[in-house]
Figure 1 (tube, rainbow, N blue to C red):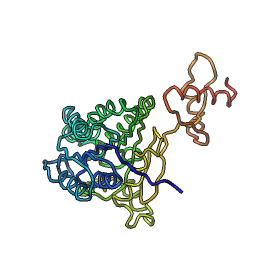
Figure 2: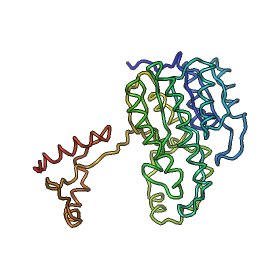
Figure 3: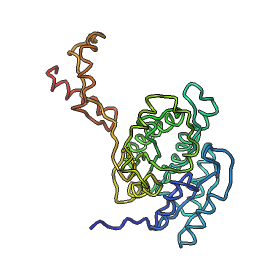
Figure 4: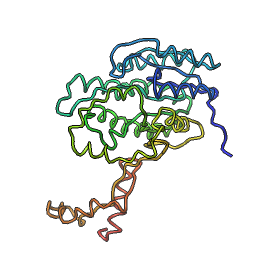
Length: 325
């Protein structure tokens, strides 16, 4: 029988926890014993405005249920704001064990029309904000040789979504960030994983119909089979995976995980075995590439490097299998 997952004595920071996914994570972690820092600037789904009520209401709900929580209203888009979130956690609870980078909003536009403001605002919260909170959180975790990070990615980055180039670029950046935190954190008992959630939240209200101008994208939407998704593209269906990934029971790290309609799956970034050019110092020609492009693209055999250096070992193995080495 699987042991009950608890977070007694653990301190969790959750950014963007005043609504949607972040709120559900905060409530469920608190129910299972965690002390929670509820960070939320209180802006709209487009990142406009500010209000303390969102974070305050979540904290009130946790406390009314017998849990421990504090609110933080700082914008994580600045180094000072991100540092203040962690500082508040340390002053209130003495440590940081869990950091869930969830804050974000949408400002959609077609790729060719995205403005500097639409780009900078999204990168500022999603990507730079995750840096600004996670760096001081990492310092705190390292002292205790324990920590759990979640970075919130998106299928828009991994697979693609029209009219979301700024959002996808930020979320793709978080994949790289999570990988490096996982590698460097491995020396200090710190894990890091990226979640690709799927939920109808208030951000859905920021989705415009402009992307319907892209025929192939419209085809993908219209031909998709949503049979397994009825009443399951909701916030609570994402929370169980998150709670497991930030628990003591989970030691998995350097992973990408999809949560979609009650289906939970690891997403892999892999390299096909490919084609190895004949040994020697002379590079192949473009014509050689063309002649071997099917083999280059064939994913029947693949490898998943943990670091960039693991790929060298995979190349040597492929060369041996292909009789080149």
